[in-house]
Length: 140
Image (cartoon, rainbow, N blue to C red; front, top):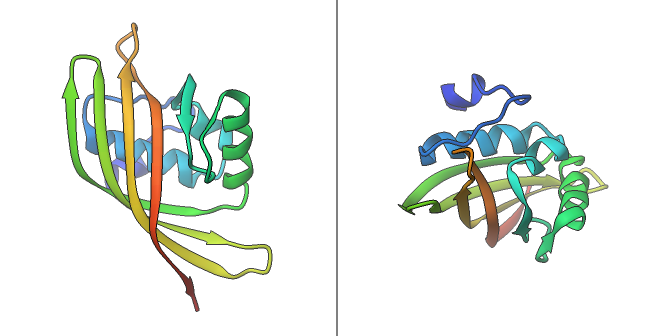
């Protein structure tokens, strides 16, 4: 865990122009296990397939809340990012550990493409969140 993640205030999340800090904020929010905290990083009309299918609005919020209630653990590394004007594309490699109802832990590795938009107040928020799992295996 980076120093940035340790110092992030989950009650006052702010996404900046720095993709590494954005990644740290996403990790802290996701790994908190609180769906409403992670969902607060999204625009109201954002689309996410974090739960396996594209979801938006209250459906997205419900899916994220349900997923994070299982206490998954996420790590990720920024591969590259591009920003033009008020739009930013960030691609990360991720490792996600999920525990099923029987206590079996499975690790999922993949790539996530995120599109963030700068809001009128200067803050950034997630518009598109598209993780793709490339490999999965049980952890003994």
